[in-house]
Image (cartoon, one colour):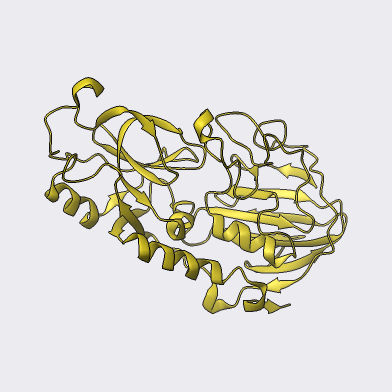
Length: 320
């Protein structure tokens, strides 16, 4: 596949990325919206984790140099040879066909493109996913540029469609399910702080990216005056590991950690976005959307995860 217009930081990703390397300082990379990414792969007959493209703001143009099946999922306005094509549905392509997309006409931020056989770049440390900060994986450890030629693996392909009732819904005002902590009240936050955190509407900062989603500053009261050996500000802790989707507080700025974020640091993690809601983080539009956090129990988080995985079963999808 030949890249004609690379858009804004279009990257090769796979799922779940590089697991098991956080102790060595490496977050997993992989798609920010894991649900749309895996669905695109399932629609074309790939393994759900096969390497595909993550396309922020939907802007992208490429020429197929293969015969196969492709699918666009997420937020964008895709076309084939200039004619609009639907999201959440596989379609056949032939050599010379031009695949393109423009900005999403509505809510949402990232588009995903899967091709039958997957993008066949060499694995690095066990994954093909590009880690943007580490500069490893993907194609030569970087985002795509005009003129890149992406190898496509052999795949028989399949043509499926996600039923309308099972398609993820994008919003301007989002709700993210979280579990509390590991550093929340009463030791770090006050009870009032936690109520404010889970009731306020948080603005998504324009500078958000794959490293993290920055939210508007907030003056927490905190349950302690300082952090002792960890520092003067009560948001400081002695360096510890961070979870993917953790909501860290750096001074007064909450940040949702993305797949290319830091694996550890010295700030409190007051909440963690549950697996079933992580895909929503990938569709938050910087500078425009808002977020509200809803606390759930670990048991509820497991139930939500099972519900999210339901749509990935090809038996629940339609043949095209």
